[in-house]
Length: 85
Image (cartoon, rainbow, N blue to C red; front, top):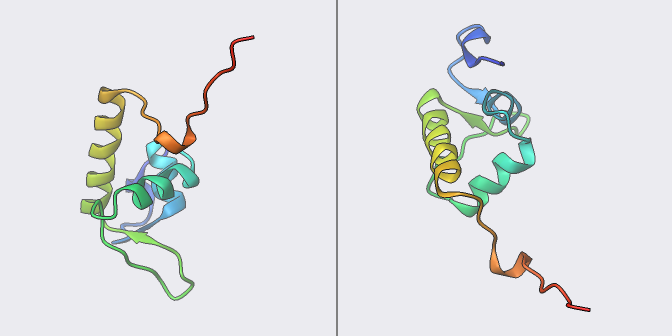
């Protein structure tokens, strides 16, 4: 398992590092952040990459645990009726 502790004690971590540590895709991480704007702050480096503090990573991890506990949810606009034929 990827650990954020092995990153030379950097104060902030990129989306890729956070996603790898949480075992989710970067697109899943970004979707969570879009669905929950108050989940973490917004910070970028000079290249425009999103950066996360250890405290923010903790909030994201807690969000992930809550989603697992509550079960998978779908947005109403993504559900499509199945035709009974």
